[in-house]
Each structure stands twice: as C-alpha cells, then as structure tokens.
Image (tube, rainbow, N blue to C red; front, side, top):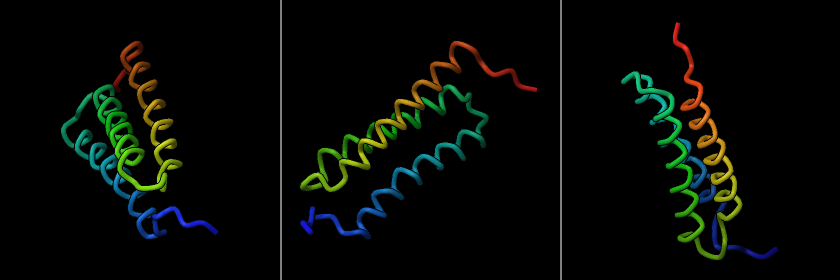
Length: 92
C-alpha cells in the first residue's frame, strides 16, 4: 500500500483543528448573541480557509479528501447564511 506522507495521527489532528475552530466560533457567537447570519459566514470562511491550507500545504495530497469535505461543508454554510439573510429567523 502506497504511503501518502500523512500518518493517521496527523490526519486525526487535521480533522480536529477545523472542528475546534468551528465550535469555538459557535460558543463565542452564542455568548455574544451574534446574529446567525454572521456566525454562518465566519464558519464558512473557516471551512474554506482550512480546505485551502490543506490542499496547498499537506504533501502528496494527503488531506485532499478532507479538503473536499470542508469545501462542501463551507458551501452548505454559505447557503445557510444566504437563507438567513433572505428570511431571518424570528426570535421568541
């Protein structure tokens, strides 16, 4: 089996870093009562930033699959932000 230059421990850490940033933004947004629109935009930007970094910086395509998943998740968050802008959620 060919080795792509990324150990399993590194790959797990590459998965944990964007997850930690994603949840940190969620906690900060909830603590500061940030609008969901801005939270979604920041989280989408985080996903796109990590995907770009993984695609460019990880040797021999070791995290390209994870980068693709992050791009798809970022696109979903961008769509959710657009939906929040068009139709804001009514607070109780």
